[in-house]
Length: 343
Image 1 (spheres, rainbow, N blue to C red):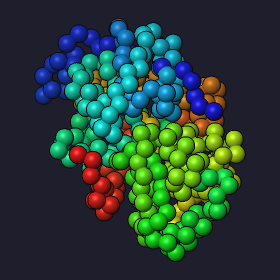
Image 2 (image 1 turned 90 degrees about the vertical axis):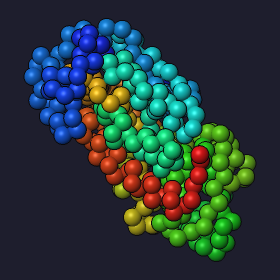
Image 3 (image 1 turned 90 degrees about the horizontal axis):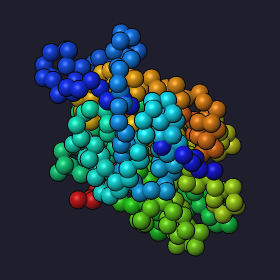
Image 4 (image 1 turned 180 degrees about the vertical axis):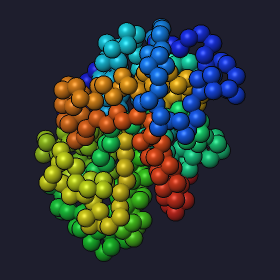
């Protein structure tokens, strides 16, 4: 089941003041932890949002992150009184949409909803010089979205160990598909091959859906894709979920092993997150973060996320900062070791 369903602008001039004095409202990285303790008047920035807000998704419409975005956008509109307009800007592994937000004014009218691909952009597009840890204002992790290793239901593989044994017996013959070169799913598969000491062949498709079709027709042996994309096929009896690329088993899928139970140390976290342009005013950041956090325990939100094998996080900026600090260098190592080139 996939989720269905999408700030008041700061006081004029707030984002345009000189960044040198603290009164400018710009928030340095070290101050992020103090957000919950901002003065009430800062948290309740009057007049924000005073016009519609763009929520840029750097992938095409109709995908799992698009559905999550529309669900959040509707609840944000109800709570903040302005439309949150989903704007899909796909292309170049998400970097086109990411750059559009990076280059937007930090006035609380443009934000990014993206996946863990945000952390791989520096490795895949080095000429762009885009480091999300410095070029953006982190707002919140939205959810951890487990990546799953999936095979055909009627195929010969019933466990991760079966795949590993076959790949070792026939090096460079087993294939895995993903939604594109440099996609989060491609990198998850590359990391799996490196961690297990295997030679697997990657086959790229224009999106996760075509890669699943290729799996069912026998064109490829396995797919790395999110549980949002794969669980409907598992439920329909077309696919078998062998494992998830998380540190431990997913509570919503207790019978599905973590892949690192077979390949120790293999963890390929995928996640959704919201960020804004660098220099976002602290009061806007605080109010947006508080509003998102208030959605976390809504029954509808929890139910929609649970149906996708995940749960809402919406825990604020520091968790996203930590994730970027760990994932940016991890994906740099994976890209370098696999020799992945997209530019």
